[in-house]
Image (cartoon, rainbow, N blue to C red; front, side, top):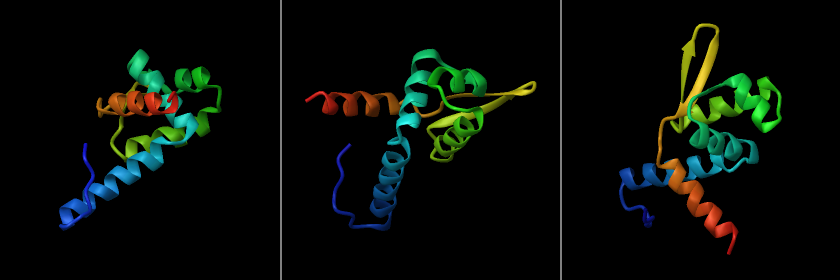
Length: 103
């Protein structure tokens, strides 16, 4: 995706969305969550929390932030909430960032 100097309101909104996605996903725990869900598919909060080694309440806060920017979706199944990747393009983003980090 090319970013250009915004010349319209639509361009400005797109730039703001890109910035918000990068800022939100840039937290180490959120990177782990997205990577985990890309690898394993839909998981309940408990499994995500155990896999990345942080509390369920902290995990839930990170999941909500990722859901708010439409990277993840949440689905209630009985008493559990499962999360999965809504925007699969995030995998491309993580791949590119990982490539940049190894240069």
